[in-house]
Length: 239
Image (cartoon, rainbow, N blue to C red):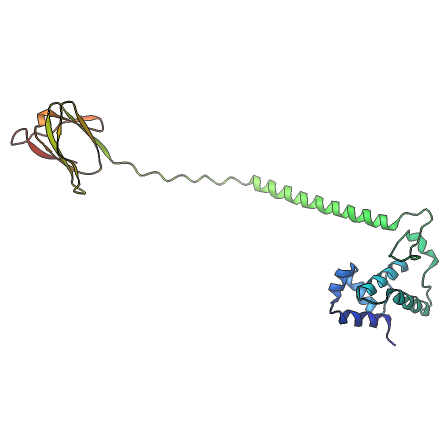
């Protein structure tokens, strides 16, 4: 004839559960379940709690919980121990879901209430520990020296020059960019008082009809037009 523990072990394996999984389902410690399957019910707990655990484990394994309690009481009685000690009332009221299985203490403290408050107190301690850890982490991070700001790379200097030609009388001018070969001004006629402005980044080749009728500025500063060997008409390079 199978013992209570053998029946529990067989039912657990039939459902394909490990001890750990059964403990997660029942919320009962795995070492308690292992002792039950080993037919050992000598735990450091009030008998009323042990009976409740046996009932919960049997229900988890789809077994007849009431019958298992009867078998448990019979097994305890055969060992010469009372199945339900008369002193159980000192542990307060514990209700495991069936009528007649609760025990009321005469003016004692409710054990379930103590357990509830104990769990709440433990939760508060855990929350305080987490808050302390976060505050410490944030404080240590704020104490670290700030990383030096990256210095923006200096923009390359603009080497371009502004060339301004001002006609003091009507004359013609041609300007060619020697670097690109682009014609910036193609023998254009400048009227008296007319000015032309160009952005110069390299050498320019200027051909002027009459140097005496043209005034030149570079970056706003007056620059003399060189004299030509052939007279006032000629060509020069502006670097």
